[in-house]
Image (cartoon, rainbow, N blue to C red; front, side, top):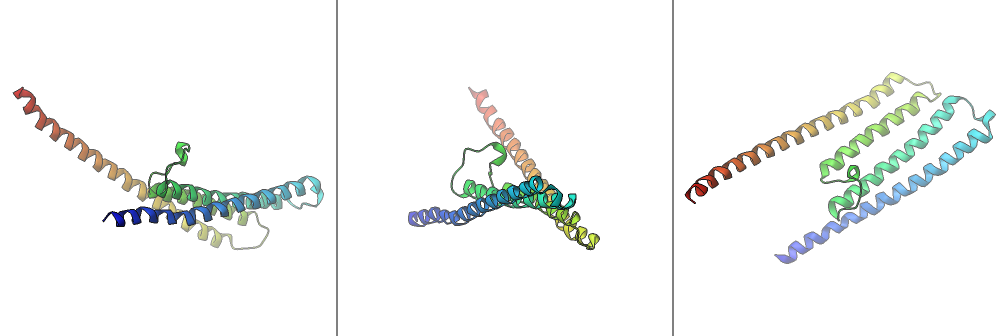
Length: 185
């Protein structure tokens, strides 16, 4: 029996594969975004007359922000998996992950931001496209993810309410069972 328990405890370290992979991918995206940002800034300042319209600059900035956001998603996922499966890290409270639901909600929130940034790059693009179709295509997943977050938080608050009610009931039951003993003394 103890061998099985030890084996199960050691299996959790297989999560290091996605943790390291996601951290490396995030690092690569941060470097790529940094290089793109430097190129964009040099282009803006050195070749001011040749940069094109303001929308081209805005699209460039949005695309760089998109690369950084995807890197952040990967990095936060890596940190969250490490905290959930390996050990706690000395991080600020807003970066701590206590359960898989918190990781899911953070990922969903960041995914909504990434989708919004993608849509902004389409809006500022100079291509002739059907904006309504793109708007619906981006809005539907955002609405679905927002609904998911709402349902998840309602489930969590109702679970907390049930736990609180159970805790109160147990404490009242303990008080009533202890009070006759106190009267005997």
